[in-house]
Amino acid sequence: MRNLGTFVAGLVFGLGLVVSGMTSPARVMGFLDILGTWDPSLAFVMGGAVLTATPLFWLARRRARPLAAAAFDRPPTTPIDGRLLGGAALFGIGWGLSGICPGPALVDLAIAPLAVVGFVAAMLAGIAFSAKVLRPFLDATQPPSGSAESDFRQVLVE
Amino acid sequence: MLDPFLLPLLGGVLIGLAAGGLYLFAGEIAGITGIARIAMLGPKSAPRGGWALRGWAVSFISGLLVAGLAARLVLRADLVSGVEGVAPTALMVGGLLVGIGTDLGNGCTSGHGVCGLSRFSPRSLAAVATFMVTAGLTVALARHGDL
Image (cartoon, rainbow over all chains, first blue to last red; front, side, top):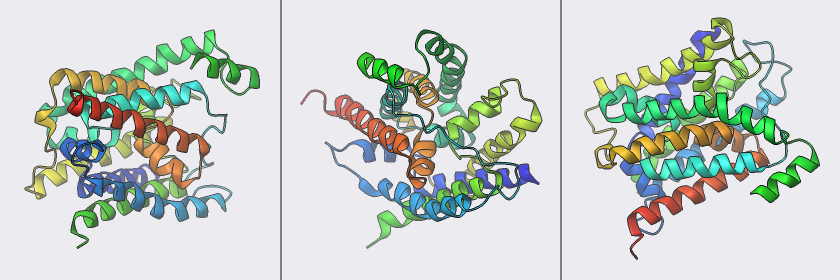
């Protein structure tokens, strides 16, 4: 039941990406190309998504638990640190180089497998490299954020 | 009048419904990178977690792929226009940076963008501002670097 529900969520999410135009690298590049012939239309994707999701997250906050699970996933509320901003910066560079972010990459894999299989393989390898090598290494060399001292050090490193 | 904006808005509403619905129903954040990592490697709290912990994520990814297949079969339009214009090295390097960056930064356009902003998360706002700037700069350098 729970897995059927998450399948439907993935299906609707993917259809939303197709309908919105996010599956096309040309459209995404046009949206990111502020100095060129800027196409602002994809801002409405984020706008529509946030406007729709906000009341649903608000509803969820008023509940003790989700409809079909034991507990809500609570994303970290640690201070903004170098790892968050550095990761986001790297992601932006990769997004700007390719015009593809993770959701559209997986939808595109079903639409035009040969065209994006290299991107998807590299992306999954990058996720695994970061999760298995990079983050454990950073955890060992710098204390994970949370203490004021470590955040100060990470800001200095940045 | 609304034409160029109507489909992006409608698509965004579908994405928002899916993201909010996933949280309300399963209690999970619809960040595609996080979901892909859980499907591949299991959740952070249980890195060797089996199907019981990864099944929901594999199901979500299957939904994304089925959406792509259905779109390919039903719609005639070129849904991935522009992908042929991206150099193979840019695709590989871009994919690697997207993977490393989203895992290290704990989220991408969906996790920080859609879910994080909808939850009014300051971390997500900082992440979105950062990746929008570096993505814009990258495109500007690649397209107009000779200016």
